[in-house]
Length: 201
Image (tube, rainbow, N blue to C red; front, side, top):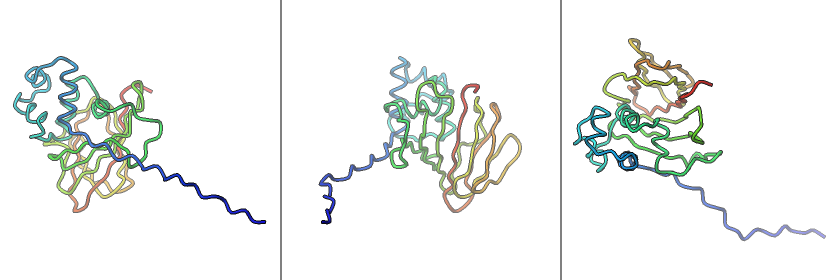
């Protein structure tokens, strides 16, 4: 006698959608929790109060470099900045459940892959830069070591005084304190995995 397994009547659980957060919402949240006025924050990061207000009101989209400056002035890393209004990340992050922040100025999308907890030493993220997009007006300094791997397309990396053309599979080490800038000069989107180390391992 053959027994046919009974099909489950349970519907498959839908995958969680990506949580897209606007930079302005994060800036306002962190600024208020630190009891800073718009002018105080502007003075700390070197921008005008009107620019900070425009960011918070979603009237301006800062570049990746400018976002890093604002995050630093608020006393957080870029990864911590993205996680400021979301619960801690789980140990497993599905590709369709990453926190996403758009930078219209940079023509880029930033997807946070960590940190997984407040004591995490590594801060991974995936940055997708559209054709013509770039991380900032000019090379900028990050006070942390980074490892970057090109996942898709080609991208131009300016590191100190040298310009490097990187393609899929290429990796680059960016020492702490080195000026650098990303730029997509191709006709297709470029995607980069960037892992930042904030503490000595």
